[in-house]
Length: 533
Image (cartoon, helix red, strand yellow):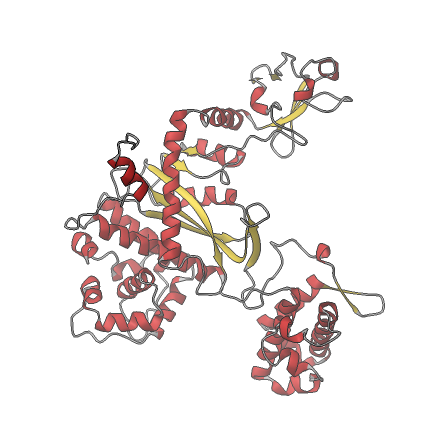
């Protein structure tokens, strides 16, 4: 309500007739419900973490919602299914990002966000809207889904394939805990049986000329893909269940037939602190200028297996396209790379992030790193810490530069143990081209200074934004299946966070109390032992 009073409507029906929204609705037919109204209802739905039905009820009976939406008190609302249909339209053609762009244009015109300031980015894992399956369960669920899809239209085709045990295995959801309770049962035998059952289905499709159309069914295509990944045909014609080490990398493996784009990934060191999940990643970027509210300016969704380093360029491209190019971009150590540092130099964006000092294979504390080797780019030489000059600097196919030193200089060197363990060849290293190497070396030097640490302290605030998105709208768990709808959910959550923060920003009547002190701090203050602020 406060946002509407201060800024007016954030979306209008005209916004949904141009750009990415131009073909969102057909020109012919009965007029639909206002898309601007449905957009705000959807945002409020995620703001309060409501279901479609609860959101539709809130539109009809909450006075605060009607005020915020600009509706008459007599408005009776609409059917909940309208929200599902509207989301399907928004999820297509990059319209989710366009919706955030429309909102940011309003905020930019109001002076609440601006280019050239400071912005920060961080990511979190998002669980897919599917059950976590092991290998055997994934195969069984894939076959069951294919049988269900065929039986929906051609039940007579499935009848001749039915065998004893099919009802137990595929009559309901596949669970190894249920199927392996019998004495003598093993996961390997169950996997081989499922493999044989799946092959009997594909063979029946291939041998029946009238069943060729079934190869176009989504679940049949997934079945064939998974069988190629997990089974190998032997010389005798039987299927061999592949070992785990023979499987494709996680980025290519289908983890569930119900969401073929969900991927398994882990983060953190192995142990109690590690996280493993099946789903995707969400990268949130927000402004963090001290004199303005901190608002989400971009939402980026990637596969769970993609490292954070791949998100920097797409995020900055969208920010530049929205006229919100940051002067400083704060990230954690997972985002910077040689390519990203070079791209930031070209865009005139200062990337503020810890640069990992890699010291090479078998290195230990005290080993010399590339920044300890000054480079004379005009002469094309590099000087080692002992003063020796390199004998060559040659570009490699991957874009790096290979630097080599002579064995004659390295063998008698008194500090060789801190440089290279080899006794048969001189020290070699790989460095980036001049602009990237210079910037990377400067970043490594600056990150040890108090001024850099003070600037980098602002990055920690993005952790609170991620926490707010997880604890309120439920960012951590996707409601929908597929990357397009998952990304739409993430964008709507980002917009909902902006609504919440704008409401706080425009609230001039509520006095926010200071953080309540702890009992220990109170005792220290009372007895003169408190630390000076």
